[in-house]
Image 1 (cartoon, rainbow, N blue to C red):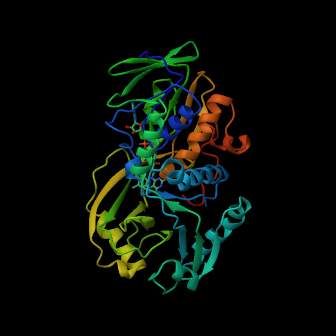
Image 2 (cartoon, helix red, strand yellow; image 1 turned 30 degrees about the horizontal axis):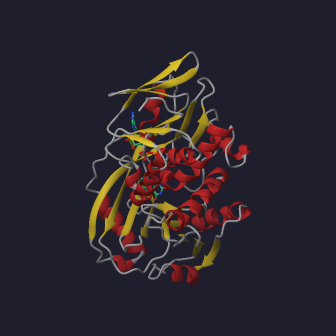
Length: 388
Ligand SMILES: Cc1cc2nc3c(=O)[nH]c(=O)nc-3n(C[C@H](O)[C@H](O)[C@H](O)COP(=O)(O)OP(=O)(O)OC[C@H]3O[C@@H](n4cnc5c(N)ncnc54)[C@H](O)[C@@H]3O)c2cc1C
């Protein structure tokens, strides 16, 4: 087979695979180059699998509305079970601080037609049976959000794209971008050279290094987050629950957990000071801290058996928003990077928008809103999003 492609995607992760899928479905000859031995082995498999459209940023809202549609209809459309569970998201509030934040987001969320409401304490207790009732003021609940298995979902998208002709090269690290004048010509890996007029950088936590190959400074810095999973227990919990309060031990800010469609509870917290870098060794402090927080919030979890913990990376941008753009200085080079803590849920929505941008010159969503994800925006002047 010749080494010429319409599009080459660097990275077979949460973003690269759906982007390749939608390009392939439009009849493009697509190559995905992935340094690991299969798809999803970067940060995709570290994700809990939460999927919500109820953000506060318009671009994320529109992208995730698209993603939710794709994830929720996947099994019906393609016949593969991706672990989809429409349980919603619930943000309980125990202090007026969180109550005010959550209530202040409702107008923008409702203006995009999102199904989310403020519930009083009794309403939250119905949605999260057994939740600590002392001090509970109420909270938001968005029943149309949900979750899926990141590995099942990426494998499903990989299979459909491959059946339609997408080519994957595993265990090949991209080491050079071939650029002539101001145009992309292809890529070189440790094993081979491939030619194309269009390259998409979807290299996740390595996006910055990939950018350097083209002389670009891409502001993506990984920081690490830990997570864990329990043995399956009887289904009792619908939504993914996010407690926005800082932890009493001051080492953590918010924490969140969800029961997947097999009954396992998956959980994670956000360290109050980011752990910068690419270290993926689990720490000994994560489990005691997160277990205490979970049992305080939901005492019925006290006898839950924990199966394993892991640590993965959020590819962060300074303002917490992804970078989805074409590079003005190098024709044919596109960026779909900086997905922070939400790359799994925004993957399919980003994939469709990147496909349209590459093939038809404009995203699927409103251009003005998509432009807020520009590589050329002011990363340091803009306000941080209220909810990560
Ligand atoms: C603990 C934890 C929980 C999370 N929970 C959620 C969640 O509930 N919902 C959610 O939406 N997100 C969640 N995330 C975030 C999500 O996992 C990431 O945002 C997302 O996986 C990033 O997608 P990506 O495609 O940019 O990167 P990746 O999925 O890491 O894909 C990038 C790929 O590029 C490959 N690559 C890199 N460099 C090269 C190279 N030179 N040559 C070839 N290949 C290369 C890598 O091997 C990798 O496979 C969580 C993350 C963590 C750590």
